[in-house]
Image 1 (spheres, rainbow, N blue to C red):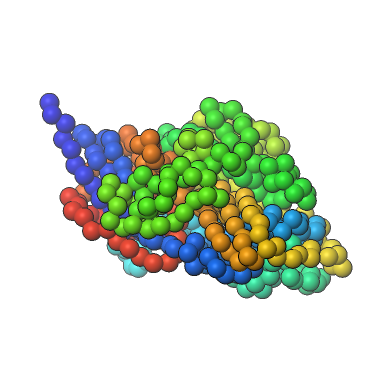
Image 2: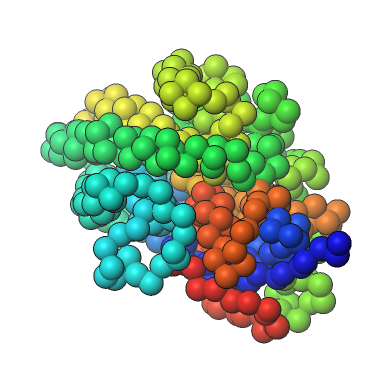
Length: 496
């Protein structure tokens, strides 16, 4: 019998940051082909060229209003690498605190205000409608509880923003991160007010966030076996714990590394390249970021996305909380994390392999949120009121620098080339560039595309499973100029 083919186009994918289009070919209810298209042109690389290198920290934050903190830190690390300096312990600690607060805010945002509505039916009023009439399985009583927690989560996100702003000056887009550390002079009230807000956040994570994720995971156990993706993971590591100049040797709270066939491997930044076969760019392909270009061509034949295709040694890698948690788990880098993850794997009666899934990504995110929140208390208490917060620096006439860091959504790299005291080139490879990357030069699908292959879509008019898989990655197609590619669609859905 001839296979029945249906092409489903979800454009735009809502409840994400930015503009994402998913086009899936379904044969006899199974997804056989996927195209994940970023329909948004950023252009920040061109904006930065010719400017003072110090401008990079402030401008690159504007990549994203959700996660400006990691962009600011990655950019400052690229400058420090170029300048040959490192922050003193106080500067390092304060940056970690800002990063942690922003990550907590981002994780709460993702679960409650972006992803949770895929699993429960809220009241018949905005912002809960319009919506898919999907397979909502939660009992009515718990739906009311989640609706209340949805509202409470806004207040908790505010607390996390305030925790960051105590040290950064404002949020979003902080003012206190500079090359060599930070510009804020810590006072005792910074510490006391930080601890107060952190206590509220930790209580919320322990008594609300984790139980809600567990309850949804119990009801949707089948989603521990859906959306595996490429099963190769990459992380640059989170929270600097020492002042080692070589980022590949630096000790980090969550380690730098890769997971390939469940084995831990190291990261060599020179192995990172970007393919552009399926991207609307005329820049050369297979280039390292230090040699990469950003030459837009919206009429390029065969292209379908404004995202490039980052690859490590030609391989497809997923980044994000799942990568950080599994890498730390496999490398035994954090005994508390291993005990925590084992506890919930036993609760759900699944093995570590089940983490490669939609529900595994949600579980990894909430466990990381707890791990980070618990760690922040010790970091805040380590800040010394009279100690230096910044190292002196001088802008070189010519230099190159690299900053490798983690955003909430995954591995984040900034590369800068300075000539004549000005920015001659700037490249950023952000987490969703990895996860939502289009087919590469070898025609290999990106991680998100691979995660959707084989998914069952029972009703082509109601493809909620595709949306659930996409949102488990917390995609962020960030910032700048919109350029849409016109084309013919068989079906279109506005996913809410």
